[in-house]
Length: 237
Image (cartoon, rainbow, N blue to C red; front, side, top):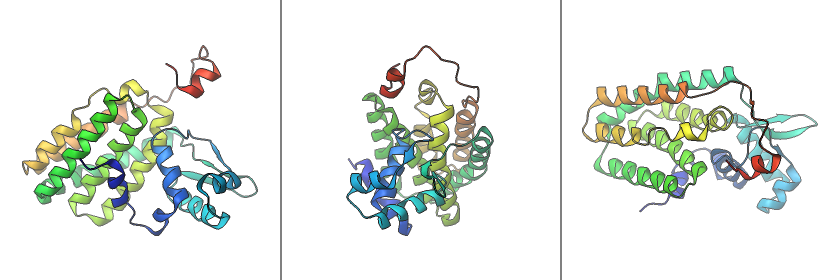
């Protein structure tokens, strides 16, 4: 079975994507190992990745362009922290764009494309079964990017790629893990519709799927004061 790293390799379409810092930080954000607001010190990144400050700065600039990182003069870089308004905009944009890419994917998918989606879905379920929730969410996002690629809509693919990356931060802030697993069969139904060449059904399923995600966002202030710092850092439930 194709490993999920291969899916990531297929996404290296932009020059910055070959940067080790960009790849490593982006993946850590997608897997929720780097929460919003985390400071990204240049010296520490140099040490972690064994690269020069020039490489680190290029990676951080690319991450800033993707709106995953915030760079403040004289204060350095940190993982971006989207507001509730940012979250609403991102998911409203996804609800406009991705039903179209699903429709076009159903019109253009080849047997090889369907096999790739099936392998990807299997990897996602494997991660869920192993309770690797961050990895499963990253794979879920890449699944949506893959559908956009299959659609053949290159301009929309670029939008979806960026919106999915930004969604990782939004989910980290506003989406409970339990809700992220509320329905693990949306992707299978999408694959079935795309494989059967049913554009209307694929479009409807994608829109419904994204609306379900959007409505699961919780913008209330954190009220859980019982969990210790240790529990929060170690991810204890």
